[in-house]
Length: 170
Image (cartoon, rainbow, N blue to C red; front, side, top):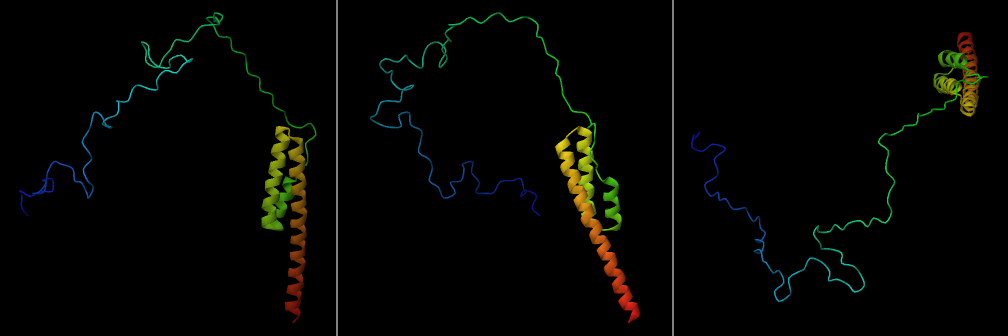
């Protein structure tokens, strides 16, 4: 290991110029990029019948013509109270079939029981918020899913009993 050749020391052929990496050097800066043409001005020449767009003491800023005077603003700001109107729980809540959903979830058909439980909870929340339409729709779906899950559970139980009876008698 050579102590004079550390990783932070530049290479022998290093120069401070940037590497062209296969590209030609850019052209030198010119004050007049188009020889023989007039130098570019600050913008378009003024047009007949139109006010000048640029110029004046503040470049690009023109005073706004005060045609209308605005009324004086009061020193205090009055804030109106915000009123939130929310419906309370329904007076006659819709049945949510939560117990039925838990029964079908545990004893009949797990996938349909989970779906029925979700709709039962949705019906309960809609009852609490006061949304009658959503509560009725969710309640109806929970009841339908519970009936189907109960039918599948009873059918599966009957098939299992018949299958066991056939196996034991053979």
